[in-house]
Image 1 (tube, rainbow, N blue to C red):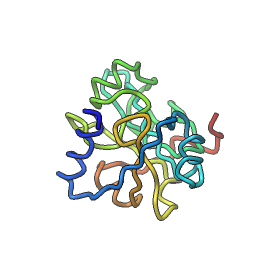
Image 2: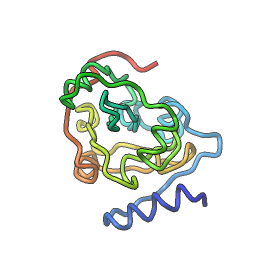
Image 3: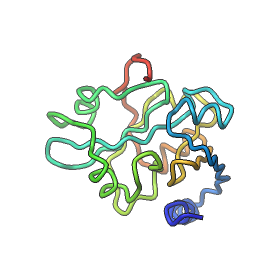
Image 4: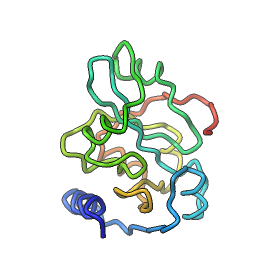
Amino acid sequence: MSGALDRFLEAARVEGLEVDVRRFPEGTKTAEDAARAVGCDVAQIVKSLVFTADDGSPLLALTSGRHRVDTVALAAAAGVPSARRATPEEARAATGYAVGGTPPFGHPSPVRTFIDPELLRHDAVWAAAGTPDSVFAVAPDRLRALTHATEADFAGTRPAG
């Protein structure tokens, strides 16, 4: 196992969450790839995307695989003037994980988190487990509680792509 996956599994254990990590050697680089690999609807894929507020603080958007993040709407939800997509280095500094494998929790320090309401409409959703080729399922309400996420409509109806 990778160090990133081990760190994620330890974070899940600390939170009392039993996870069944599925690994896909071909990777799950896109939401569509992950949905095909798992056998679920793309709307059930959690994209853990890191943004940077204008003051430099990180924001984590847990986004349905169907959606893109509207940075203006995310900034409004966060109560900041603006937000932009974090660089890979900023994302790793904020979460401890590389882009593409960022899990929704288990970060070295708390990250202010927002959750797409689309994710809350499902019985289970799938998120990265610390590496680009690993995912786990979780109930959306449990995910929201684990991440202390604020529900916010920052995606609208724009399609993923």
